[in-house]
Length: 562
Image 1: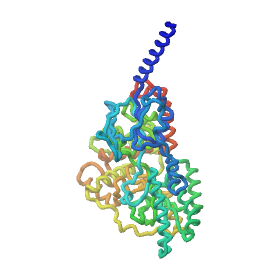
Image 2: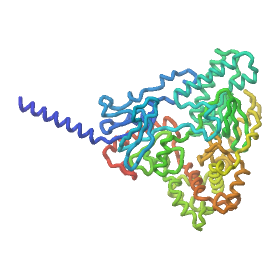
Image 3: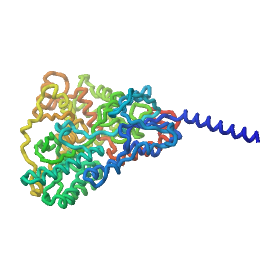
Image 4: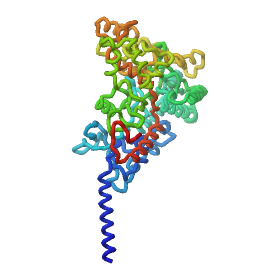
């Protein structure tokens, strides 16, 4: 009996000490964010192998794909959220995983420490704290990109959170109630009931479709006096909506929208947003058109999160919308840091912009301190074997090395134009009105499809391909120079003999402009679309990788993942 009791106690002590040792040996994983990528990672990771900490200013997971339904009342906002604490793995014991409602404000990759701060209205005496990590997963998402277009913050609605969708719903009902009041003219009612969605990506298309269904199916029953009055318009900078998907999907959506009389203004960017109208310019011709609205929803491409920018600065990465990661989702140049979702830019091969200084010195064979067209061409041809993004750039129809150099110089000058006192395009240039609601005349159809086949030319394609300007809005800093203004700046710089930005056949790039050119080539690398599905798949993949590599040494080379 005594022998049996001693054996039982020995086994219990051995088991307890073993569990304590295992707990102490678990790697510390800190996950930033509570979106699709972070939650998919949480669902798949093994809490027995890792000490898990989740940090996010939002304490719930949001089904973002259902936000358009919340905007029109077909979905209740509370039904598309789930508290993040319920999704933590191994929550039977608090030492297994934990959640902190805070924002990451800084990271030190050398000491592997993360600085966080409580940004909520209610804070304690020490709102800032530090976390140590072995592996850091950055899944902080990305905001919509305003592209510097004036008036977006004041007069347009975004749909990123439940509160945003509820605000759109309130505005939609308010504009309908106001339009139903007596005394409004027919034209005033039409303008007031016009909905404009800026952005032809997945969110923009979903918003336009949901709002159209509400206006066409529910409004005639609730507001019979407004039957046939409301309209929906999509403004998109590319030649096709849903251009991140297969061409057949894009064509199907466009055909459906045409049948539903949803107007599509393609190949156009928004120059400025006013309280009751926006101005949009053609990428091909520069023609400006005024589009009246009662509700403007901004659903354009993605900008950059503040923490993502901080991480780029820490690592010395070139300025991009997202942090550069390799095919294993490891942040380039930072051992133990991973990124996924909207804040991660997955590229195959090495990014040219990350080695801009070395490549500039290599290209500048005459030692002039600038790079001309032939020097850049020779460099790009030589880099095809080691950088796969160069080949599709050189083979793309309508793109030339000279065009790349011109865009690079233009974008650099655009960023410095305010400091140099250069004027923007005159506001008086926008005089044309959008065609009447429901107009199906050849003129209206031509406007709706303006630039759909031709805007991807040297004169206007740069911004759509991520070379630093344009997109749906009016440029990286909200300022667009006319061609004459650009010539004036470029000519002045050439006369000053600074070696960069000159016009004509003797165009030479300074180092800063050379960097811009490399970014323009890097965007040709294959990149994953910024969708919830991609983020979720990346989270599942990373969970499998972490579970398989638990306890293995981490290195920038990544042999542990090969």
